[in-house]
Length: 205
Image 1 (cartoon, helix red, strand yellow):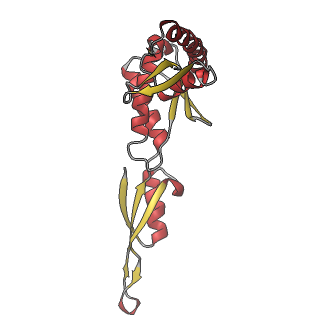
Image 2 (tube, one colour):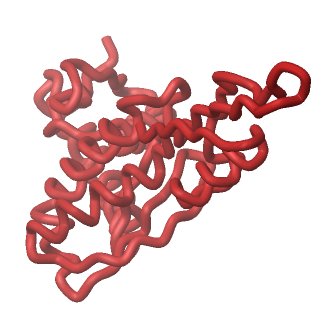
Image 3 (cartoon, one colour):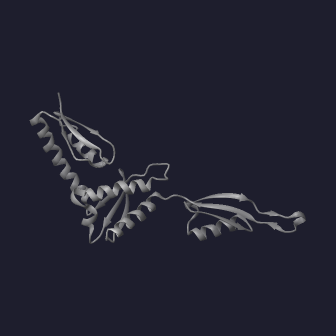
């Protein structure tokens, strides 16, 4: 977290100078007045104002910079468009080499999402959910997961035993749970710890 201390003739001037140096606006910083400016004895001389200005943590900006840095090391020049949705902040990524960031069955995308969320929330008081998407992969993955849920539910009923899915991020596990919620003949629950948490499908007794 970047912080600077400025000494100037007045508090306002000190703050303005700090904002200029930090290249930030007032709503992006926290301002602490260390000392007010004071006139000297009998009006002779002036004691300058001392202001401490701290640049606030911006989870979205931190996440974007982290993601671009990692992508660059993977040889991918990525563009990120940010949009707000009910489930969280979505980073829509695009690149000529986007397949590298998605990986087999979205494994690389999910790993990047997990790490990006760790970076975004390392200093945040309120949790910020970041969702990574690329070329509408999440929607296509949702359709695949819905089909998988029904297929594995049938398998669980056929063998009359629980069936365990591969580890998935929370949003993908939610798709499985929601798809089978009204099934009637099976139940679902999650077990394990992130990022290895997985869905279990079990026949109703």
